[in-house]
Image 1 (cartoon, rainbow, N blue to C red):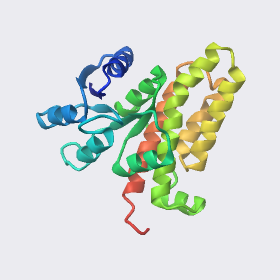
Image 2 (spheres, rainbow, N blue to C red):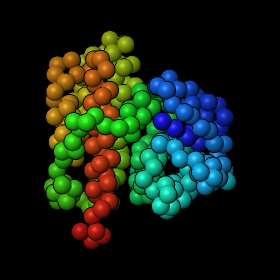
Image 3 (cartoon, rainbow, N blue to C red):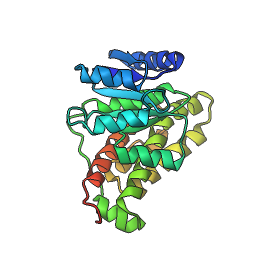
Image 4 (cartoon, rainbow, N blue to C red):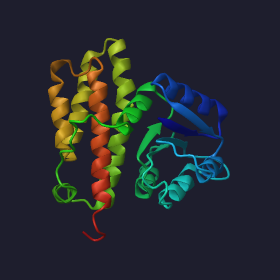
Length: 238
């Protein structure tokens, strides 16, 4: 699996590449900024996942995202935006352009692991079970743009939770870890992600322990991505 890491800060780029490498056997390619990444893509590079910093000279992460989504050769490529900014305007803009996910600095290994698992081939038995986006929009009294923003924000929470839960367990904060899992379950229910909510339910009383919680988090990210794709397909004005 080929992974492209784009960041103008060499230290941040090396750290992210190291974390990707620690998650499994990946063919990692680096780019010094957005323009370097675009040149490599135009030259034939076809990564299965792209991690890209938001703020860069010459071509920012947001501008690279717009180019990628505007080119039919790359429009389905998973594009993970790496940012230290979690303000609503930034997340809304990135979601509107078609960002596949977000990683919030400082990096955590769990965030990388969940994204890589989410964008690998899903288990053969995995099926996206969710409320139709139009029904979720009607229930929450929001439009498609706002639902996409909610889904994007929830994806940030899911990916951040992997490392946070591991850290809580290591510190013996089991009650806090269980509460974090319960909040994510509530988020799945609120956003109509029935399959993901059931997967959290199936974890049982030890929901915060072991590799199973990371697999469930990855499945929840898959569900968010699938639901976002369905939401984007809704015709304007509906």
